[in-house]
Figure 1 (cartoon, one colour):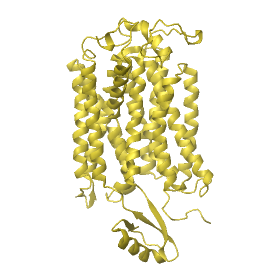
Figure 2 (spheres, one colour; figure 1 turned 60 degrees about the horizontal axis):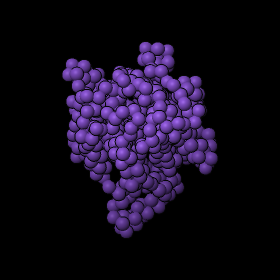
Figure 3 (cartoon, helix red, strand yellow; figure 1 turned 45 degrees about the vertical axis):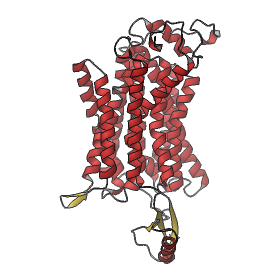
Figure 4 (cartoon, one colour; figure 1 turned 30 degrees about the vertical axis):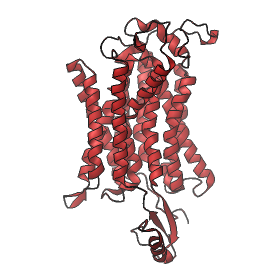
Length: 472
C-alpha cells in the first residue's frame, strides 16, 4: 500500500517519505529553471547579442506572452480529462528548447537593416511557454499529495532560482577590474600574455586619465551553462517519472485531498508540518496546536483574498521587481548586484524551510507580511528610479541596505506564496489550478506594467562600469 492510500493513523517509513520529498523538490525544480537560468546569464549574453541591455525588457515581455502556454495546456487538460500528458509535454518542451538554445543562442540574422538574435528570442519564448505552463500543470498535480509535500514543491521552485545563480557564480559572470585608461593597453597586453585571452577591454573610448572597465572572460561559455541547465531539466523530468512509479495511483485511484474522504486528516497535517513520519495522527499534542480548519471554499471572500494576494505577490516578484533589479543594484557595484541576485534567490528556499517549521494561516498576518514585502519593494523601486545616483552610493552602508532589502523582500514574498498555496491546498485540485492561474495573471500584469517604463519611456537609467556619474 503506498503512502497515499494509508489509513489516517498510519504513516510511511521515514526513508520512503524523505525520498518522496526529494523527488517532489526535483520535480518542482524544473518549473522555472530555464527562464531563471537565462536571467542570470544575461551579463554574458548582452556582450554578444545585438539587443544589449534591452534584453531584460524583451525577456519580460516574452515571459508575459508565455501565458499562452497555460491557456493551451488548460484547454488540453479539459478536453483530454488527464493531467499526465500536459505535464510531460511541458517538460519535453523545456528540455528540447534548452538543448537547442545551448548551440544556437549566439546566432543573429539581419532584419530591417539591423541584426537581431532571432534564435535566442524564439527559443526563450518557447521556454517561457514551458515555464508559465508549469504553474497550471505541476501545482495542481500536488493536490494528490498531503500538504507537507507542497512545501517541498516550493522548496524545489526556490532551487530553480538558486542553482542557476550558483552556476553563474562558478562561471565568473560579470567579473571586471577598473584600470586607468592611460595604462589600459599595457595592462591588457600583460594579462593576455600571462594568462591567455582572459580579459577584454571595454569597447567604449575613454579620455586619458579616466578609468575603464576590463572584463575578465568567464570560466566556461554560455553554451556550457545552458547544457548544464538542460541536464537539470532532464533530472526534473526523471524525478516526475519516479514519483509516478513510487505513487502509481496518484493520477488514477486516489481522490485529491479535500475532494473526498481525506478532509479529516488535513487539519492535523497542517497543524504540525514537522510531525515525525512514524507518529500517528491521533498522538496527543499541545492544546495550542489543536486546530480545526474548515475546507476552503474557493468562491468565498477568504478564497478571493488568498488568490488576490497570490496574484499581487507574483506580479511583484515575477514582473515588476526583476525589471528594475539591475537599475537598483548596479550603481552600488557589480558585487552588490551579484550578492542581491544570489542571496535573493537563496532566500526563497530558506523561506520554504521556515514554512515547514512555522506556517501562519491567519489572513491578517499574511497581509501584514505582504505589506512589509511591498515596503521593501518600494524602497528598491525608489533606488532604481534614482539610478545612477541613489542615496549612499559609493558607501558600504548603501551596499548592505540594497542587498538586505532585496533578500528580505524576496524572502518575505516567498513565505507568503508558500503559506497562501498551503491554505489553497484545502480546496483540492481546483483551488491549486486557480492558484496557478492567479500566479500567471499576476506575473503577466507585472511584466506588462513595467515594459513601457523600461523599454519605451526609458524611465530608469543604468549606471556605467568604472564611471563616476554622481560627481558634481
